[in-house]
Image (cartoon, rainbow, N blue to C red; front, side, top):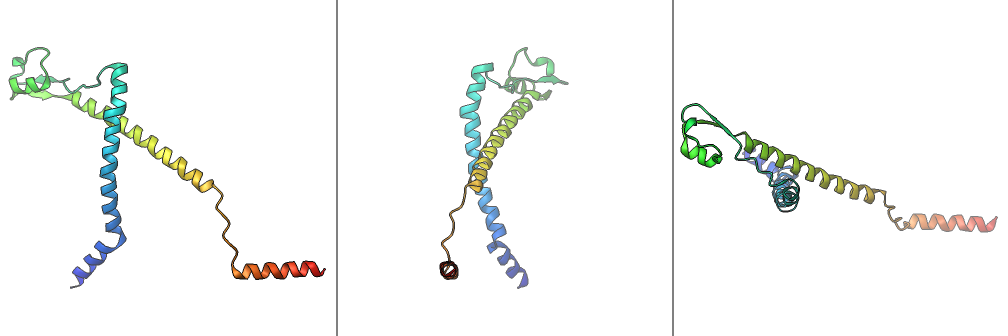
Length: 148
């Protein structure tokens, strides 16, 4: 019975709930960042330097590699020579570039959010309304000033 109670406390406590919310928000945020990379940044990069897709860069070695025609795509090479050891490093380069772009965009977003938080923290807060005690003390002070 103690195990179930302990699990219930854990599941209902803020830790698990906060984690679940973080995962959901993270998934949605991931879609936003992916869209920003794929739909905004990559077209600009493609317009400047051409389409940065290195996924068809590979070299084959071993049995069957001689069957692959020159200039064949990676998919064609795998189809023609399924037994060949194909070292497809181009896809890794594409993924690494996408990661760097993604990391840079996330960095800029975090920097922007931190700047907004800093401005919010620096903004002067409104003075709270005086309490009844403070009002009474102010009246006493003013009366004492007027008597002198």
